Amino acid sequence: MDYSRFLSKISAARQTNPLRLTNELAKMMSSLIMLGGGMPNADYFPIKTASITLADGATIEIGEELMKIALQYGATEGFQELVSWLEDLQMKIHDPPTAKYAPENGQMKICTTVGSQDGLSKVFDMLINPGDNVLIDEPNYVGTLTGLRPLDCNIISIPSDENGIIPKSLKDILSRWRPGNTHKLNSKVPKFLYTVPNGSNPSGSSLTAERKKEIYQLAKEYNFLIIEDDPYYFLQFDKMKAPSFLSLDVDGRVIRCDTFSKVISSG
Image (cartoon, rainbow, N blue to C red; front, side, top):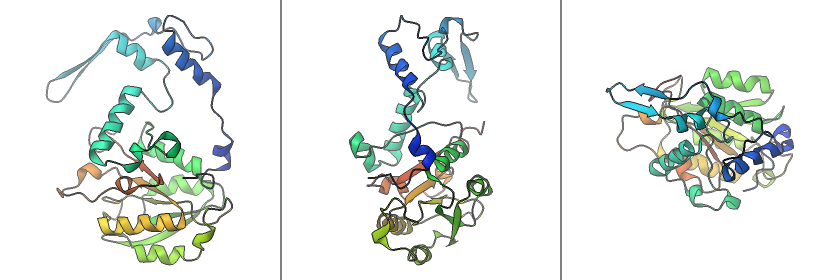
């Protein structure tokens, strides 16, 4: 999938930080102290070990070697063991088709952030130029609106009911643009649709499987991304959960935001 039209000018201008190469060198030459990346000597970190007691009385012990890794600079996408665990979780819960793709064909990637809202802020900065059109369901979470408005984008609200976004209303709005123009770099077709598909805040609505499939087909037809902000996924009471947009994604056009804030803790 070609992402050229989606990237903001700032994001498109970014280049790989060459100092990140020192992380790879450090892995291959563990006895070497790398000065280029400003990595401190882990032997002098003030915290050596930690013991965490869980609610059921069990304890988690963090030894000295693991603590060195935890306190040292790491990869941009996050602590590799955690990222691998999260990838396994996504496979178990959503089985995203793109996880099986080759990297050059849009393989699913995970990046950890300090919270879902922080992740969304980074996504918005990556995608939005002033004047861009973006789609959101109505009503929408005030935190999202607060993050979008300063970016000077045109926020287009999509009507929803107890079953979430109404696909016909979305199609009516999209009909302002011609599908044939959606791949052009200067296309004014909305860049993305942002939605909270389960237990949307503040409406409490949840998208049905049928509506998700209809919306995804519209995303393919009009070439826009779907930002699936799903903090309440694990709080659903139905045993049979509707498939996520990520599980339907065959193009690599879904950006999914998960969080531990509602199932473990918010800090």
